[in-house]
Image 1 (cartoon, rainbow, N blue to C red):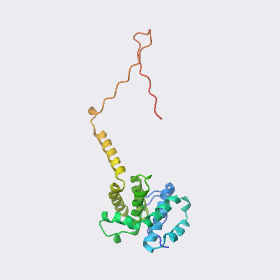
Image 2: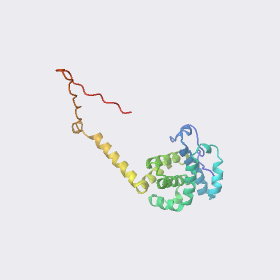
Image 3: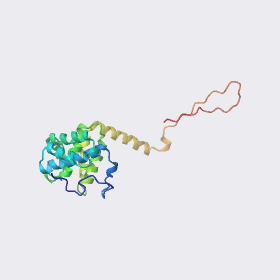
Image 4: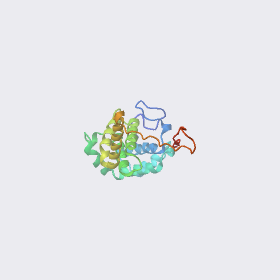
Length: 212
């Protein structure tokens, strides 16, 4: 079986020179994406069947720590819809698909597939995870290209989610730049009535319970 030729062909402990995460800190889904990437690389480079790739990959060291269900969905989903994934990716490329590294190609497949089918994964997380994959397994600047391509596709494939995020950032920016003099006035706490028979006593506002 072919495996990624990068020095990062298997999960590594420690932080890489590109800033990739420590292997020990990766959750099951992140590990699943790594194994799916290695399997998709085999498919792209060697033309191996999904069944053969799957059997080989599941025997690799550390697979038991991966989210097997997510790995299965990504691997078979990407292979089964490869033409559709490429049809979405190709228009946003600045070069021919044949000039794209198999690693970056496979990472973009994973990102687009998750945009379309893994709606429980926020779109920013999809991009971040794919950038991490490209950092660890791809070329020097491959992660930048992956980031640009997936960032360009996100508004089309997750339009409502991206729009909501943009609105939230705009509101946060507006609040941050609002002069203090224009900030909404805070209402004064309501005064509590004085106890009967007590004259000129200081009236204190009831304490507010902290929210947990």
